[in-house]
Length: 122
Image (cartoon, rainbow, N blue to C red):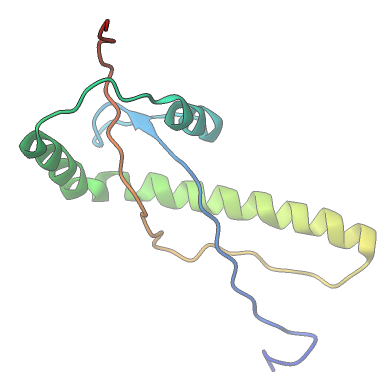
């Protein structure tokens, strides 16, 4: 029985920042740390016209299937890492086994296109 105390199913969610440079057809993936750092350090210095922003986002979203396998690999690697962490803790606490598996396909919560800009002098 899946709902018995010994076999309990739980769902946990995690939000991660992933990023790449280049086109979706040939992405150069950043480490998760570099992607998060880049997002945290981004400082707007200007704004592109709305039409250009919409076109760039629409173009990226139309090509999202090109990076889907890379995103799934990221999810599987993250799942494995979490599983190993749980196993280490459960070995110390001598609790039962746990199975961690990604729920694919991943939800994409946001898309940001960061571009270098010129800093304007006041």
